[in-house]
Image (cartoon, rainbow, N blue to C red; front, side, top):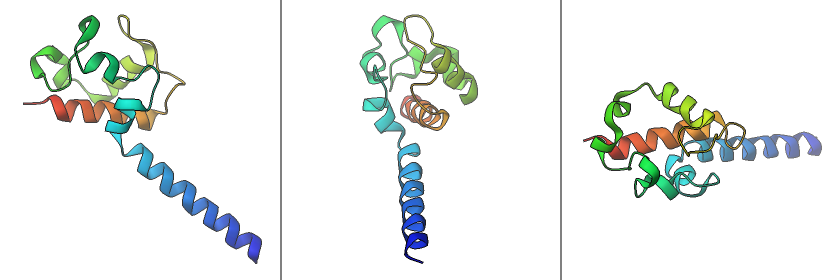
Amino acid sequence: MRAIMIVTGAMALTLAAAVTHAADGEEVYRSGSMPPCSSCHDTGAAGAPKVGDAASWGDSIDADVATLVQSVKDGKGIMPAYEGKNSEEELTAAVNWMLEQSKE
């Protein structure tokens, strides 16, 4: 009985942590990847679309999120590929957060 309670408790904590982490796009953007997204997207370094500046995003501001996430996974320009560095949920949360901050 005690083993079942421990396993159930551990599963609940793991699920709660996963839900909290996946939902925090700003955290992933600022420090949840290496290099962090913010290292280029805060300033627009190397031509990266700048968070908060819709014009710098060009047509990408209206692109399908899945398309943008695929670009992040594959890498684009000098941006490294994040495939395997972060989960799909983390990358999607970061992209969604960036878009929300950038749309006028």
